[in-house]
Length: 339
Image 1 (cartoon, rainbow, N blue to C red):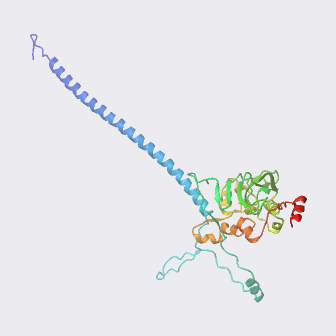
Image 2: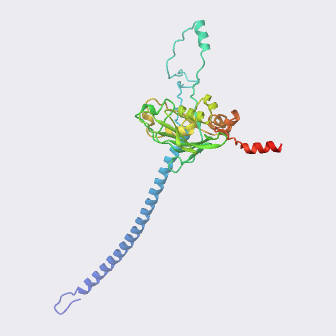
Image 3: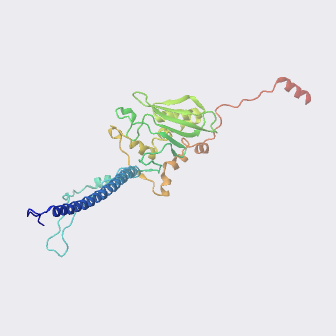
């Protein structure tokens, strides 16, 4: 278009182009806003999914730790797998002879008849160390035992703390943790025909541990000893003089030699630092046939540990003699007149 001056008017065309471009950009902006909104929702959903995965991973880690602790508790120390000493390479049809890898053969030295007879007289050692059978006990989600632990007449309330810097607080096969506490039902001090509950404690006695057995019927007079056997012997002698000839089994009475309790004590921190203690091997009780050699069966037949077995082997009466009622003289005189 041209005006009176002969110039072309492009204002309308420019306005139309600007409008079209603005409309196009508005559509793109709207599309971008919608896309960003979808990304925000997707990002929040992914964050929730990541949080759920982290929670599930944390739960899985706790379950894994619990299973590992249960496995260590049930199976004890895992023995290293036996390695094959010889490996044959090749087959019978190959021209290359098989190669043997292993220790070189030792030259066999002929023995004299006297050496052969001495070798026959020596007993053969068992290649596998006997494992102590442990019983199943309830555990929490972290694999720790739930107290109290009930094992027949024995009930353990605390395992105590292992003392590594005092040699007298352990032996080659036993550990005496400070704070250990258990109870056992046995014959009463006042009347051997009645059951009584005894509390067994291991306390800090300085250089040596202090062992105590306290009856629920006589709390003010604990039986004290420097060893579990001494403490147990004092208990047997106090119940009846005829029981002083029984061999004391203090570790069994306290419960620290019970395989289940000993395994838990051995799993406590600090046992690896004990100088004289030798790590014991334990196995889980898998079948009912293990009951024949279980500590519970042995305790049921031991008069020094079981109340029923005590009365099965010994006929005991009350320590305190019965009080005889004396008849007054006047009543005796009256009875004489009647006769």
